[in-house]
Structures are given as structure tokens and as C-alpha cells.
Length: 203
Image (tube, rainbow, N blue to C red; front, side, top):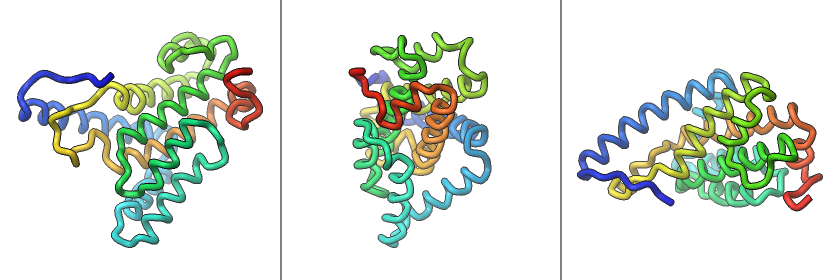
């Protein structure tokens, strides 16, 4: 369900602007912790190509993002790859939503007894004394900045091109999500089995 915010269009746009600004700052803080300066530079370069009028550059950038998830046959990633294939015409909130679905799906397999119908925030709370501190901190930040916002923040009166997430936010989100998934794989053999298609939800 989308969360509607009461108020005038001007108030809504002002509220959305400050939300975007704060979210953007925190996304870059998370990016620095997870993918570092080199990853951020790669995201900027990828964004410039994704937004390029050169079709070959745009397609190359989209292909790079898709390649981060191309070897994993999971439903959220099928939707994610499809959305990324649209290049600069992608819908940022839908990408953020599917990134969140993917990270949550992997997190559900961190421990087999917690995987049924638990949201990412609840999983992180249950594992608060088990997960490595840095991984838990970064997963919590990702949950807030991408997954929770993509699910719940929606301004029906904002201009169509006034996305909560910029294209660069989404490129960073792709790199961050891939890094966090790798971190969960290192921590949990069960998560590794899931992500490598050796275990399914019905197992």
C-alpha cells in the first residue's frame, strides 16, 4: 500500500525535496562504507553512460548493472533485470523495490528457521547478536534507505519526473545490494546455497 501524505501540492513537494536530500546523503554514506570511493566513482561513470544520448553507451551501462545479478535465477532479479534493461527510462522506485525484495530474500536464508514470511527489519532484529556488526549496520541502513522507502513513500502529487530516487541513487543501490548479498553469502552457508540455486523457498 502506498502511504499518502496530506497537504497542499506545494507542501508535498517541499516535504519530498527534503526527504530526497536526506536520503541521498545517507545513501552516499552507506555507499562509502560498502563499495568505497572506487565503487562510487564507478557508479558516477555508469550513471553518465546510462543517461547518455549515445544509445551504445546507455545499453552498455544497463548491461553492466544487469550483469551484477545475471547469474541468479530469482524472481525479484527477473523483474530487476527487466527494469534495468529500460536504461534511462527505468522507474527508480521499482528498481529500489526489487533490490529490496532481493536483499530480503537472501536475508531470509541467513538462518533456515527464520525464513518464512519475515520482513528484513524483523530478520535483522532476530539476528542482532549473531550478524557481524558492520554487516548488520549496513543491512539496516539499506532496509531504511531503499526497501522501506520504496514500499511506503509515494507522493501522488509530485511531478512525474520528480522521483524520490535519482538514477545515480539507483546505480549506487545496485552496487550496494550486490555487495551486501556477497557479505551475507560469506556469513551463511544457507544463504550461499539459496543464492546459488541449490536451495529453494519450498525446501
